[in-house]
Image (cartoon, rainbow, N blue to C red; front, side):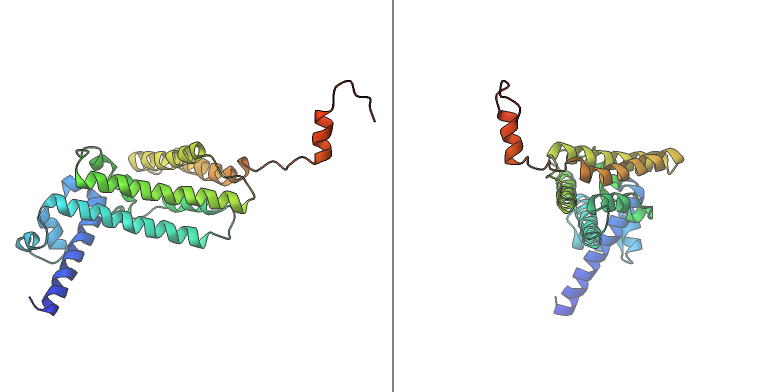
Length: 224
């Protein structure tokens, strides 16, 4: 195969993965056929097995691409919000709740129902778990940066885990029930909690030595 042919094959392969990632997010992996993917990519079904070992291999790569895009988007949101109030954490929450087309939805939500049905040793299941972990690492870093810029102490991991769970839970409920007055209030509550959270762990100022000395003085000491 010539260099141009190899380049075209690589381009076609990347195109199939991108199309599959969008279709899987919009409709679910079980509701999209290979014929639909290849047709949307402008290729024949016969070309699929020249590029991929199996449908499962495509699902795995589609998951990975979607999480890569999500991670890139989260990094950009954090970069833009570095100097803004109320900080990176609330900015990530606003980005996460932003309405977008189904094919561009967060893979953490879009693939959740498929991921829970996969065997634990499945490659796509591992890719999903790794993608979630990578997004949480970014979320945790955003929490640390938000607290640091506010002069607050490093937030305990339990607090960050609870905030992340609230973010994802609110997203899942919105996806399941639609955008309603109640889900919008839910989202606002999560965003506000993250904005306020930067003050909740503010470090207490150290007491002056004289104050400490008075606290340690015997109870029977005469007043000065």
